[in-house]
Image (cartoon, rainbow, N blue to C red):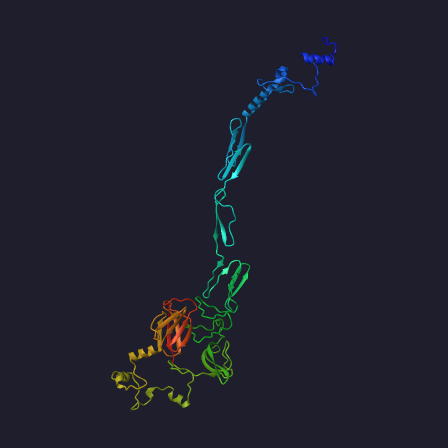
Length: 466
């Protein structure tokens, strides 16, 4: 073809390409479904290629492309300029991405492992053996370190049986989880009730005490009647206060009375201060029981008889015949003539007679014998006996004492069951103690205490009656 005025045919182009080179100016080559090979960088126009020696930032356009060396150098330069910043719960840090390695390390109990592109974080094993701890008869125990890990684990056996004890009796244990612990009261003495997880123990409204009752403090009884059904009543108070509520007006009779029966009829006798006239009066045979006053007009009311030696002046009416009263009234021994045998008593005559006489002047009878210290000591010894409650002595002799639990058996050798027994403390305040007394024979008594006692703490006083 010529220099550009005529188009080349296909054959001409083929022949030209395969045999040499072809220069194209401002032409378009359709490479679709065709291959262009052996193209090198230097085959391109210099402005179309950015090499490693050139600045990428100076060739920021869409008409040129970079070589691989240019890209590597550019990325490396950019990475060198950047750091990785990081922070923790406390403190901060950074990693130079071009020259340093970011390390993730474990604290106490944690281990990290890097492999390839992976990082594993593992919780270290402790000395605790994996398993289940605790049972119905054992509770688990653990040791926890500062990081909250279990560093030790074990179990402690617990008792499954609850032992119980009381003042008396035996127990077979309460098996926890299967048995029920029952706290029972006693009839008319103790009552119990349960609500939720609370057991209430108290006294019933009407209480009966089967044994001895000792009240250390004051005893206040609020009621209308107090019955004391006892064989012997011993009161330490030397003065008994009556009519406590008689302080606002003098309307109550003050005294005491008793009951007796004659031929099937209940009668009352006593001594009282009559509120109506402020006089003390003895009475008997009253068939109406006194209340707050004594009915002096009641059926059978009779003035009682007092047998006593009277000291001091007597006022009022003198009982007896009028002649006797007239003869004695306003007279004394100066008005009577002295006989020759039964002479008047005078202090001088008595002193003279007694000074000249002794028991040798009197014949001793067979029944009422003279007083001697020996006889008095023997008589008292034969009727009274006292001993401290401590086991010991010789069997079947006075003073022999045995003990079983809280009961002492005392051999007193007084030969009768008609005796009065008192139990007192051996130390201050030497108080009288109430205990059960059993006259087991004519020479022996049993003293039973309701609670544990110590030998030597109490003393028994025994008095023979009759």
